[in-house]
Image (cartoon, rainbow, N blue to C red):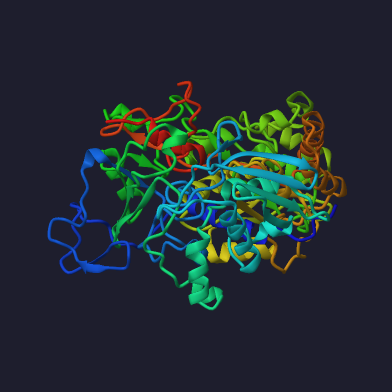
Length: 607
């Protein structure tokens, strides 16, 4: 098996996600206190009509029928076109993917399982073929049936154009219809990655062939022209349709003819969902605390102070760490840098870091105690690794032991207190992440302080995000922070391990790399990463992941600094009550009530 071609578009997507989660900033003007736009401001309604907003109206909706959300849109919407590369809420690729356009299956963050939606069943008929049965009740919002032709068409768009899901064709040979309700996906026999193909059935929003063929035709199949399509009134299979938008908010309205009533048993409770576009986190947090927002996907410092102050606010987990972990922001070492190319030096740095302090000061305690592994300590991932087998290699914060380790390898302290190893002074090394990403900035300051205690000099560097991106991809760094393949999907934890450790296809230092930014290389790790997607036996998978994790724990090409939620799903129950919580028996994940299996929350909440 070869894995030479990389998931470039997907990694760009994940990188963009790490920008979003770590440092949500915006230059959008704040919304007015009321919901009324300034005089003469154009408001936009589906179908392309534009009219002056009636004074005191702006398509206001009843509060008890409207679910307000924030943290998913940080600027004025420009389009609702999935092929544009930057569509607005609720069309953006991820975090709200089941509202207007739907996926074939819904991923459940808690279990990692795929639950039925447009698809009812999937199975591998052999090592190269995935058979998907579709829900015969599914219809588009214009009343036309959803069929296998729509699925084939959506996949083929990724083969025809360079768009978000084009990378899946690295692993796919063909997608074909077998009657109106069945689809077959045939894997590339030279690169049969089952895990990534399963990702596709839970992340790719399905598009109506009868609509987008006409858009293609009008654009003469030119992607640049297609991307200019605003798509103000998108035809989807989801429970909501566009209702209103302007520069301050986006509102969608429930489709009371939604086909999913047969699947879910009823319609979603909110008739409307509105995303107000706040200027920054502070404005969004204030609106959330006061009950103007019901579901927040923003980082809220010390969230417990809101309910201690009497606000009806809650998180999925009632106690520390409050949120379910979904990613592990980490630091990556430049493996070509003298001093840092020594695994013992990297281990000493790992042992010196005060992870509890990072959790407390950088992320308000939302990170569980650090247990170094390639896997998150969740039901969906921990099952892949023999915890007893990796425990002897896992490090903990132990400054005394870190100093002893450096002493043992002959790294002696100079007069200035900084160690020298084989003629190389251990510092100053720069450690970087983007300016303004306050939680990451705080974490790296702690790392730099901790390194002093073991005689290693580390200095923080906080450039603008574009500079950081270039440094990350070209290897122009000593130590750098990023999130390796965050989120929950069928390909986790393989995707994370591949991002951190896989060396094949990685450009040399100075050229653009979209994974393995430190240029780590281990032939056995490469072999395991290539083998895992071909294995279905759970015991064998556990053995492979355990060995891979042991290699990572010995070589330490990266160090996770914290566990971060996939999304910050925080709710205010001033208006809507009954949001899922840990242990309530619902199995509804905290996925902001509108992404993946989190959509089921909309059928449970009530006034």
